[in-house]
Amino acid sequence: MRLRSHFLIGLIWRLALLLALTLAFVQSLHTPGLGAARIVAAMLVIGAAALLWKHVQRTNMELARFIDAVRFGDFSQGFIHRFDGSGFAELGAVLDDALKRMRDEKHKLIDANRFYEAVLDDAPTALLTVEGNGKVELTNKAARRLLMRHRGVRVEDFREYGEAFSQALEGGAVNRPRLVPLLIDSVPQTMLVSAAVVHRLGGLVRVVAVQPIQGELNAIEIAAQSDLIRVLTHEIMNSMTPVTSLAHSAVELMRRIDGGADADIADARAAVETLARRADGVMHFVESYRQISRAPQVRPRPIDIAAWSAELEALFRASDRTEGIAFSLEADRALPALEADPDLMSQVLINLLRNAAEAARGHAEAPRVRLAFSHTRSGRTQIEVEDNGPGVPDNLRQDIFLPFFTTKAKGTGVGLSLARQVVLAHRGSINVAEGKEGGALFRIVI
Image: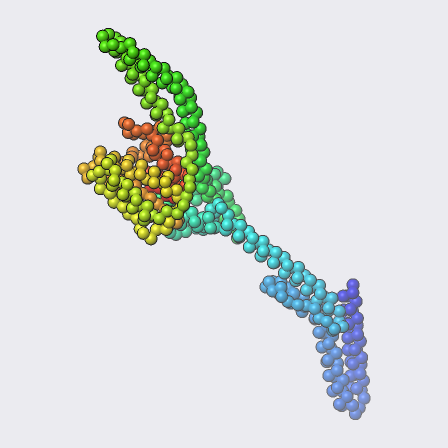
């Protein structure tokens, strides 16, 4: 109301001024001898008309400027006109307040976008977007760290990580989360892949989440194996302890009564001694598995790979079991230090090297074993133990790491299972593949 009253007052006095000047100009036209006065009166009429026009158009001009400022996002405009006595200060205040509110809302939206972008970029789960034309974009840091080996932005370019993962990107995981093996550093890792379809810029985009769960699966598997072994060994030892004790007591009794004259007593003594030896063997066998039920305690510290690899080579060459086996070591002195437990990892590698030497000796005319250290693109350390032995069949490559499983006539099935536990305790991975010469290639990534 106040703004309207100021505008009307300004309009009325400008109209009155224009009418008065117009009447004066008309009067001068009918009065002879006032040539100069007519000119002055005409100029005053024109000035009053311009003043009235400016007063009427000012609102439209200010509103037009306000609309242009909003349209182009220029919220720095000002509309307050002070000391003009026309009431436009109130209009300017209203427009300035509106711009201030829009400026504040814009800042809030910018801050919110920055926050959500930061949350998205730092999210621990790898996120990808797949557009309708098949273009794939790595959305956050986790995705860029996880998927760094491929070249290109098409779904086909991601087949390097496995056919199952490529199919999931093509839409197979929409509303149906699935477990997908993903080749990371040449080692298959189980991922939980899920996808959803969202709208973006008028189109549909698939958002794919890739969450590594191999560590959780390994922990569950190791815990289940440890519980099973602990229960089995406990029950077996409880049952075998009195059997072993009685068997040894029977051996002592048979030795006392066996004078060598009675063949039946001699046969009974031999049978009892055999029983006692087998009972001791079973107890030793069960005791060897008790160590698997105890998780290894990792005490990591920086390891100089060059010095450590030279020490492993010396231990390999000094062993009688590896005599006559050609050994090659590949370790770049520029490799960074490895953060690991040197005692546990040395035990793992010595066991793998001895197994490799045994396999190569029994198969190849010129047995060879290779130990190699390298750096992966993801910044981890890769250790390879390769031989030119018979290799491991495809259908046994997962089973050889299970407790109690062995392909050796005198094996216990403890070594590789313990090796896997040690590697997993380092948050690493171990697998076996076929080497260049057809032998076994054990690859550890830490």
